[in-house]
Length: 350
Image (cartoon, one colour):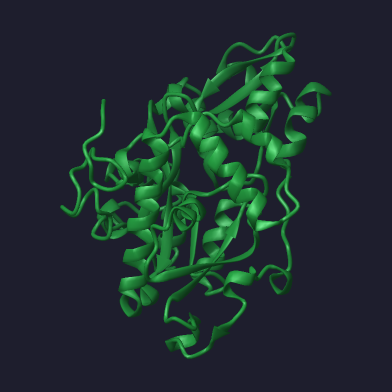
């Protein structure tokens, strides 16, 4: 369902007239706004796209560069200056930064809240009931080195499997749109499903969850948006504008009734004219981000640093959570708004 489009076909009319007068190759609009290139996701609306539609940006203009194929690829594109920012699972962010990429997390981008999460499903007739039953079996994931892999390996570890036993659980990379079918036809034994793919699969019956990220860690922010450090230094106003606007849009999602959210999303998808199926919006449940305004917490990064150290993929002490992120641009963390206020700083009902 994810599709990658050529950049030459991906420039919206709103930013078609750009100048190259921005410093260090960064484009600006005729009215002086900094252009932020990004990748989206077909049939859905990201929080920053919502922020733009809500009028929350004053210094920046978004420029769509097609749709992302995976979180690790998305942040790699940001690190190599193909995009201004990207989003990925925090474990992938930690690995990228530990590997020397000069990027910093500035805002949480996705997670598991009361209603939205990632589930790992088995067929009702599979006979699989425990972690030990997965030894020698196949787990379908969207990409390696990201959320689905980390959660699976952590669950297996917590269930008491040894490292050699965990190594015998095979991870199979599949497009999200094909994962349910692969499970039902026996090509894989466990399917990682989330969002619309989870909801439609459950509605068809015959499967049930073996484990979920929410059951493992509770309500938790799992991913972050990253910018290159040089971009943050040279364009702090643009980064600050992006963060405050996106944080407010996330808060809008957290406090706005679902029917209003879905209607707004449908309108945005219609207006951007990308030939998308807005029918998937009926499966929308929540933002998936449990923290007001998507403020980043140490634990959301440190837990994956510790995981990488335990699995001998990172040297102890090489990085800490505080090396990786900043909340200084987030109005819900820097004193601009009370931490649990609404999208404009107003008091909201509990």
